[in-house]
Length: 448
Image 1 (spheres, rainbow, N blue to C red):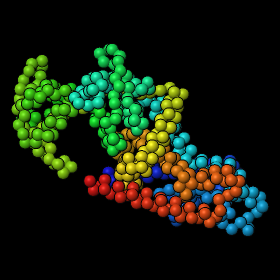
Image 2: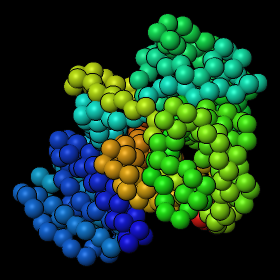
Image 3: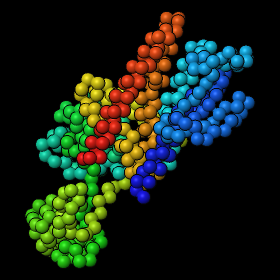
Image 4: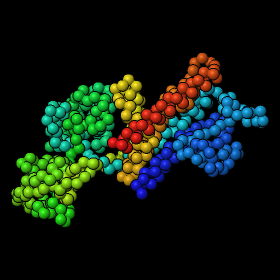
C-alpha cells in the first residue's frame, strides 16, 4: 500500500507539472496564431485521444507517463505540400523570432507561475511550522561564539523578518553560499538583541546535510516530560509514570525531550539512573532500555512516549503580501538552484545531489503522507526546478531553442540546419548522461 501511495502521489505531481508546462506552450502558440496539431500528456504510443476545437487539435494520453509535448504545424517535422494556404501562415517557423521565443519560453514560465500560485495560496491560507526558537547551543560552535545560548526566538536574518524555521534555514543557506555572515536578530527574556554568526566554517558539502547543527543552531524542543507508558515495558517496570519530568540521566542534566530520547537510544541494555520530578517532589529510579533493531542498528527504548513537538506558529499573510512573498521565494529558489548547479560544475558541490525519478517519487510519497501543505510545497519546488532546468542552454531543451533564437536576433539569420542537428545530438548525449548520474544516485540512496 505504501508503494502504491508513493506511485500515485508521484504520477499526480508529474501529470500536473507536465500539463502546466505544455499548457504554457499551447496557450501562447494559440495566442501567436500558430496551429497546434496535438497536445499529449505522456510520450510514446497514444492510448487515448480526442479532437477538439476549430483546429481539431488532438488531445492525447500516451503510454509513457514521463513528459509530454505540444505538436505544432512545423515545416521541419512534416510535409506541407498539401497544407491550405491559410494554414501555411500559421506554421511555426514562419512566425517572427519574437513569437517563437514567446512560445518556447512559455513552458518554463508556466512552471514558475504554478510555483508562485501554490506558494501564494499556502502563505495566504497559513502554514503551521515550528517557531524559530533555538535549542541549547553547544560550546565551541559558531553560534556559541556569537553569544547565542539557547531559548532565543530569532526574528530576522540580515534584516529580513523570519517567523518559521524553514525561512531561517533558507536565509542562512543563501548567506552560506555567498560566503557572508548571518546577522540574527532575536528576542531573549523580552529583550531584543542580535548576534553575528560566522559561516566560514561551513563547506559546500555541509550544505548537503544539517548545516545548521554544525553551526550550533538547532530547533528548540519541549522539556522531557513522559507521556503514555506502554504496559510491560522497561519504563513501567522501572516505576516511571505519565507526567514525570526528567531532570537528569546518570547525573547528566536533560535540557529537553530530544536529549532524553537520544541517550535512551544510545543505551541499549545499560542500566541508567534517572532523576525525575513527580508532583513537585524529586525521585530517582533505575531503568534499563531494551534492545531492538532499527535500520540495521541496535538502539535502546523504554516504551514510553516523549512528546517532541516543537513550539508551532501559523505563518499567514494577506493576499497581496502572500503573492509578494511567493514571488520572492520562487526567485530565491531559482537563483539558489543555479548557484548549486554552478558549484557542481566547478566541483565544490557533489554530483550526488542530482536526483532522479526514484528519489523524486519517494519524496512525493513522503510529503503526501505528511499532509496537503507538505505535498503542495514539494510540487512548487519541483515546478521551479523543472522551469530552471528547461531554461538551461542545452540543445533539445527550451533553453537551447531560446539560445538559437537569441543568436538569430543578433545575426539576422537562423542557425544552419546542420549545426542544429549536431547540437541536438550533443544535447541528447548531455541529457542521457545526467539521467544516468541521477538514476545511479537514486540506486545508491536506496541501497544505503
